[in-house]
Structure formats: structure tokens, C-alpha cells
Length: 192
Image 1 (tube, rainbow, N blue to C red):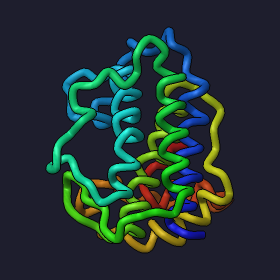
Image 2: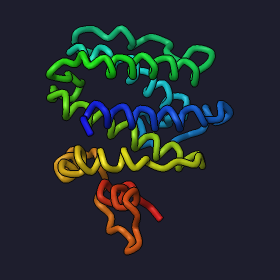
Image 3: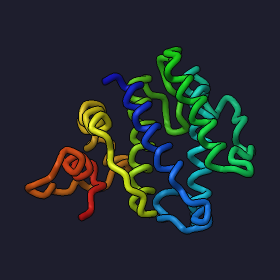
């Protein structure tokens, strides 16, 4: 699986979860570690994901927030947050599928080769999908394709990324663990 394909699977997983959100939960608190804000809500997290989606075509073109941030003060969610997110997701998906990708992705935390950049973006999306689903009781599993893609493109970097705070400590998988559980254990996300 290519890193771009991993991103597309992860982005689709996040959309799958977002499309199942209940707008009545938008004001609900979410774990503080999901945001740098003191008391984040689900709507704030959805807004951060909308912002991230809006940036995908720019990131693929080699642009960075340091060049100017057209989305910083924008209301990307409007009156229908889920539909607005989905529209941004459609645009991001089309940009990735076009195949027109810069060699370097310029994130606020550094510049990375496109392949690694796609892995960063996929990791954020897939594990937010997992975390949001778990927190709000939405049925969700990482697809076999996502599990295989993460084992190929992310698990080999897990210890290095763990030092940066991307992943919690690894967890020993149960003896009868399936592939998804083993991945979640390796990346520190699994809890019984």
C-alpha cells in the first residue's frame, strides 16, 4: 500500500465516524489530550479536523501556514458542521487522488518527505476516528487495509514517534489478540 492510499483509508475512516456523530453531542467535553485547549468539546475537535482537511490541497502543493494561513479565522463548519466537514473531505480526497504531490510536506512542526507526511496525516485521522468512536460509543473498527498499512508505514517508526509524544507506551497484547488489537497495542491505544 502506498502512503497516499494509507491516508485515503484513514481519512475515510475518520469521515465514517464523523458522519455518525450526533449533533446533540457537539457541546460534550472530550479528553483534554485531544487538544491544546483547556476544555475542548466535540465541536472544537470537529473544527480542528475541518481545518486539517482544508489544508490538504495546500500541503500537497508544498505550501505551509508560514506562507499565510487562509483558514485561521474561517468558519469552516457553518450551520451544518458534518456536511461542511464532508465537503472539505471530498476536496481533500480529490486532491490526493490527483497524484499531484510535492516532494516535501511542510507542517508547523517541520518538513517531511511526502511519504512520511502521508503517514503522519493518516495516523492522526485513524486514531482520532478510533478515539472518537470509542468515547461516543460509535461502532467502529480499523479496516484490515488500515491495519496492514499502519504495520507497513507506521509501526516501524513507533518507538521514534513515541519519543515525540505521538504514541503512548506500547501495551502487551492479549494472547488471543486479532490484528487490529495487536496494532492498537503496539501503538499504545488498546484498552480492554
